[in-house]
Image (cartoon, rainbow, N blue to C red; front, top):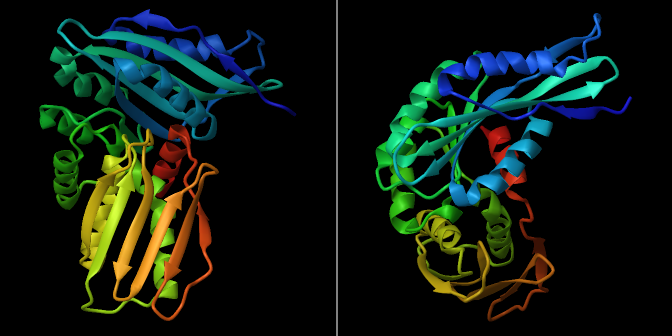
Length: 312
């Protein structure tokens, strides 16, 4: 039997009326047949924070995520200024014959920056008990870090996307400090970097790593890829004690576009192709190895977010 989707109308409500609006979703998912039931299939709470410019794509991400991981989702849209928090509520269900499974209860909060401190108090009583709460900070690092910490504190697991950071060097430090304090944090850029880490690992399958020998790496990145390059550069500094240089490549890309690695007499170069593959060449004084390729990351934001939640 093929399941279809049923979406309830979006209703604007006062924040204090959100619980009643959520209960109404159940009635709206029923067709009125006396022997028909609606069951809840929620597996998590999702708290996603974004800004006005990114709210439309993030709604698409939440819809796609709910199709594979049913959730109660809070979409917090932050805008400049002050004033009251505005709320909208809707739901979605899978329908297969007389079977109806509620897979999404979405609460959208439009929050003036001056009222952001109230968000945790609005959200906390509405979280579904006994399922994990994942926070996705889908915007830049805030000027006041307490803005992030207040949301981070009510989540079991927090996900950021450093590709959205404006000052990656400083903001990656802030994330690392919180990770060392013991709070679970994950950066979506790590998933984008997996193919590059694999490409680097395969370099040392061809040219063995030598302890105590200097390693220099140049990471070339697109205009929007400095955070990914900085993240990988820090990893190379920690793992290989490498001297790392970040080099802008002048391309509109959200990640790396190539690297050059020198270790002892081995030289490895890699380039991201237009076909979405990483082409790598390795040579030493004694050997010139056949080039190899690694598929680059093609995951959309929703796919990466789902993968990060699965890893939690």
